[in-house]
Length: 88
Image 1 (cartoon, one colour):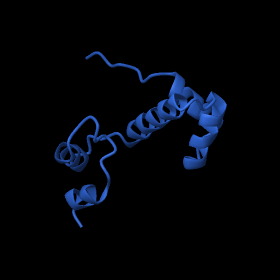
Image 2 (tube, rainbow, N blue to C red):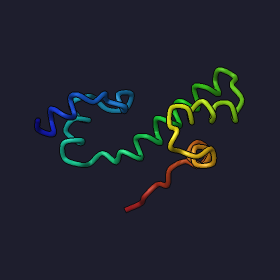
Image 3 (spheres, rainbow, N blue to C red):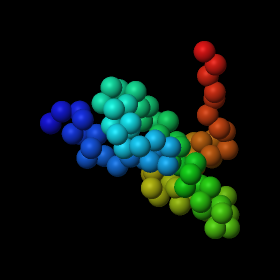
C-alpha cells in the first residue's frame, strides 16, 4: 500500500482548515507534523468542552481518557499555551 492510499484511510483531522486532497498531498510528502495535529485536536476538543460549561479540570480529565499516554499537566500546557509562531 503506498502512502497516498494510507493517507486516504486516515480521517482528515484538519478538515475545518484544509480539503482532504490537500491533506493527502501534504501527508504523502511528509509535511504533516502529527504531534502538532494531535495538539490542535486536543485544543479544539477542550474548547468544545468548555463551551458546554465543563470545568477545566474535568475537561482535561475527559481528554486524558482519550489520550491516556499524556499526563494531566501535559494536556494543561497544550490547551493553555498556544503553539509558537515561527517567523522565517
